[in-house]
Amino acid sequence: MHSHPRRRTLGALTALLTALLTTVALLGGSLPAQAATGAITGYGGKCVDVAAANSANGTQVQLYTCNGTSAQSWDVRGDGTIRALGKCLDVASANSANGTRVQLWDCNGTPAQAWTAGSDGTLRALGKCLDATGPSSADGTPLQIWDCFAGENQRWRLPSGGGTTNPAKMPGSPYLYLGWGNPPSATSVMSQTGVRSFTMAFILSSGGCNPAWDGNRPLTGGADQQTINAIKAAGGQVQISFGGWSGNKLGPACSTPAAYAGAVQQVINAHQPNVVDFDIENTDEFENYTVQDRILQALVIVKQNNPNVRIAVTIGTGQSGPTGAGTRLINRAAELRVPIDNYTIMPFNFGSSNVAQSTISAAEGLKAQLKAANGWTDAQAYARMGISGMNGLSDSGEVTTTAAWTQIRDYARANGLTRLAFWSVNRDRQCAGGLTDSCSGISQPSFEFTRITAGF
Image 1 (tube, rainbow, N blue to C red):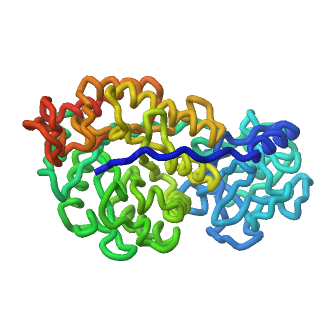
Image 2 (spheres, rainbow, N blue to C red):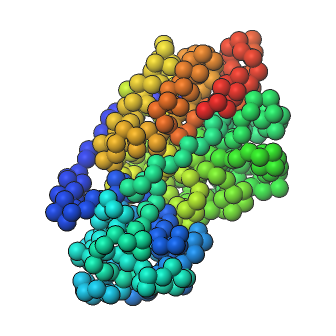
């Protein structure tokens, strides 16, 4: 179950952002609003590409048909660097002459690797603009720097969040778990409620750094895969959640970020989810900062290798927003430039007598923390926020009614939040009372919370 005690507040901003913004103002450009990872597209709709996916120093950077590979996955950072394959986008020999080629090189903090994004769509370094030679959009066209004139071959679209559009909204996606709690038929629930996405829970460790459903059901070939296939066949989407409150989790079991990312990759390869959700809870992952860092560092690798898979992180909250380990996670993700698409809070088990009002207060607190940590606007912060409630009775006896959940959904929809979930579809049924895994403990029509969520 997702449960969370209150946590103490910590975390602070560094002076780095101020210094960078001052530098950029002098250069006449603007930094991306936040770190973001993904494709950079330009002339002819082609992607900025590392030739032959070669990470050697001096490798040519070129235009190429977009293909979703790591050679086209760029990490646009708030420090001015643009990175791929562990190296930086670099102007050869720091030469500002027209026609100087742009290459991949070890990151070294020099002006040859300090890029600014202009309001006219240009990317600038050393007083010149990133330029497709020719101009040509043919595969293999080298990139160079040239005098800025903001022509079509000098206009670039950065990854979402890097100064361009906000992330798209994910469909409402309640949690569904198949190991216990009398799981309903996913496709039957889809036809009854109109919901078109489920968050499948939970991926745990089956021993060491090996992923399995609930730590004991096979990753492929079992009921989970059959359900996922059925959801997709019915036109639905799937999010897959790692972690949760209990069980043997991969965070402590995987010894390095690379190992954790490798376990996540096994799950992505097996099921091709639209979203991977990291439900980071309890003392083994959430409050263990070594493990928390390990997961965050792994997510950088996951995004680099899967630029089209969205990453959500789900954490506990107080009534005024995340506290303690949650605040630390938000600030640490900003420091590490982790490309998290959505920060989802779990607003329950936090002592509320009015869950809807407290949830909105907690979400506004999350917004403030995201803005402070990342330099985002209200709209940018909302677009990276989600809410995951607990329908009916919570573990601590709070009550979320269908009316309250409707109010929460409408708040999320009106403010541009991009994720809405609840725990869980299994519990979205009436029962006589009490907290169980298979019903909500309140009077309600069957699957009414799912029906409300489908309207997100």
